[in-house]
Image (cartoon, rainbow, N blue to C red; front, side):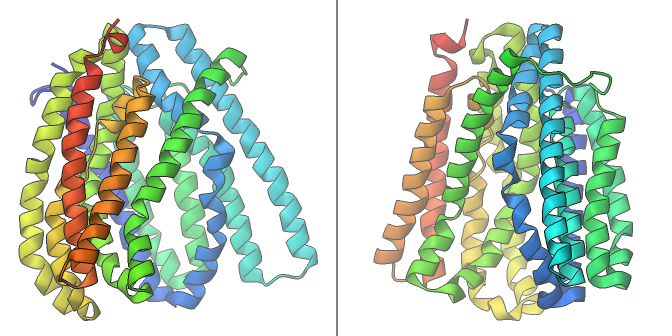
Length: 422
């Protein structure tokens, strides 16, 4: 079996899920405390500058995402030479992008310096530049941690990094805006250094292989397209709210989205661990149908794993909102509805379909999501006799369930196709 309760793989996955979730929760804690200590004016300067970081994935061309998908398959096939070539080419590309960013950043820095820009913006830009350069290497290193043993190391890295990040909270408290800058640069630097220190392919020198670059580029282009469509789909609730009800309704729905992030946290981290392991097995056997037993269990059992947390949340949320967030009383009913709707929002098989290059099926499923998460909620809003956010929650919950059923059917049909079982 790929994963059993007694297997080392199970405990590696559990350890990774816990450590990465803990890391995410620490990041959320830092965000909330920063909001409390700094206020919107100071925090707004940093948030405005970090908009630049959001556009970096376009420059990366999805190369590291391609490595993330291709490497476990080649390892499963036993193609060590090709695996090394893929890693070396991706590392070479990461170095090139880092140099490009550094050169552009230095030019912009000189321009800001001669225009006598305010120090907060100047130092903030330097921080963003450093984070951007360091991120090039972090993305590469994390894509090379594909085996269960490597994920054990990655789990330890996340735990160490989280503890260090917690200690950095005092820096933000004492040095305010500049402490925030130190925190984010230090966070990125420490995480990347630890990943480099324990990197499985640390000894491989960077070099460019044209054939491997095209393999990674093809994967990367699709991943970029996939992520852009996914981002658009994720924005549908906000689009509906702002177009029909205005910005206040978007604000009232923000706690609902926050709850969704929390519910999806552990399954998302678990998927990051499981998909490479299944990719390894797929590369080893060449038969996608061998993975169906695991994909089936994940799809059917995950809602039941999340259900207890949803029930607890349903019971506690009125007290939490009334005590801590009294301005969001109107959000209680939508949150309660979505606590069960979000159970079906998790689609762990998506990345496996991408890994076996079932691109047509992936795009079909994204088309289904567009219908389910835009058209169904819109119909519920138009014909529902409830407040806007409540109607939207009903619509999204129905949409998530329909999408979940269609996903299950498409994944089952796809993995048994002859072209994915050679």
